[in-house]
Length: 383
Image (cartoon, rainbow, N blue to C red; front, side, top):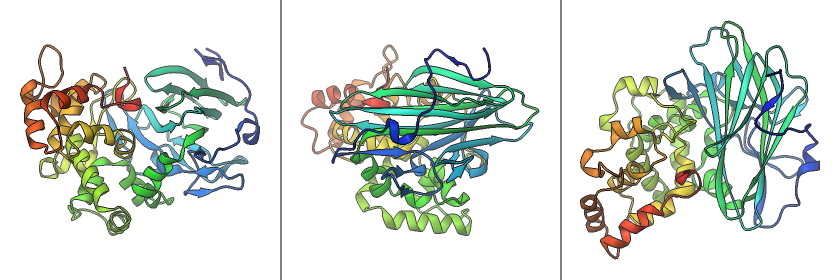
């Protein structure tokens, strides 16, 4: 494949941002998933770097990113382009792939993802929409011609985009710069992620907030007051984040994180230091390192409804364990055998009954069991 050629998709030249923007409606917004801090730019675009979840991978394992400079992150400007996402990999890095993920929801009018690969040096960018491989762009020396990929977002749906960057020659430095935008996004996405979940407080261009935004174990420690090992900067970010969220958000996010990564009493010092999970984030969903805020915003209403309206950690765990899109390695580590039916991998009837009994709002065991199968939509139920 030649440098800069897109495999599996049709590419066009990058046009100006204003040329490919639709007129915003009162219930929608356009989001740039780049930049250094959250703001509104001169064109009325919402610049939201905090909505990006980053991870770094070897050939066999991935880990949450805890240091801004080591992973995909936004900058205010580079090479005359505003609000890009960049990744700069040193020679002989321990990692072989770097992943950035975002999600969006669109109303009945639908919307559009716009992914522009502007510069690559010694690397390959692979693009996924939900679980679908859209294609890849690679460059050995330097990508001179920007490539844009436009992906429609169907009406009344939730979807995610993922970009994975891989150095070609590991003994040499590598670099990529992209722009990732979503047009026609439901304003509830920003209201939930930025306002209610307060992620914009975390991403301010510094390492402490970036770590707390991206490392799920750190978020759980913050929510449960287990901050003895935090640096002073990390403690300050934790305090600010906790002060921003209301009590209901804290309760549900804590239950979700406990289901995803385990109770803080079960988290070892090694896990807290390394945040490492043996899983490929491209081919399946790993709750332990996936974006908890996007899960909370995209899926929690359905999850709590399935659990009788309660922040039920065990019921949340059962929902995660029952999904075919969840990584088998995560299930092996987190799902009790009694919770699942061996022949189907779905929630066992006894567990459904126990969840219904705990919930005072579930009308019946059958209703709860039926709701489990329909609980996940968008990123939560990729088939």
